[in-house]
Amino acid sequence: MQTSYFAKYKKIENAVSIALSSPKGFKGKEYKKLAPPSWLLKKYKNDNDKDFYIKAYYDEVLNNLDPDKVYKELGKDAVLLCWEKSGKFCHRYLVSEWLSHNLKICITEYSDEIDIFS
Image (tube, rainbow, N blue to C red; front, side, top):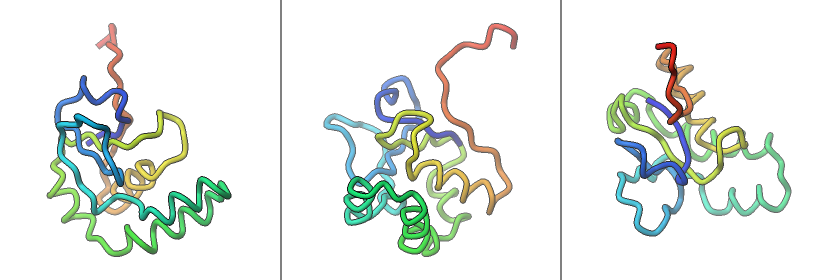
């Protein structure tokens, strides 16, 4: 399993949107169970309070889901997508940490760069 953002999705097989909305023309799977509630997105855009966002996202979304079931429904080859570019704070990193911690798996950020040493 990996994570990435919508600008890269055309290069990605097994793309799964975990956002509240997906871009027009998105042809991948959508998994709305992991999408943040709209009120939380609006609040974060207004006050930029990461601590509140993290707590609320866990309370509203992650604490109500079974990580084993989510992983099975998504599939081990899924690439979870949202809107934020790599390195920016967003819920896909919270999902990644939650799954990694609970399932003892490694989830990385998708890279389309070629490793010439492998």
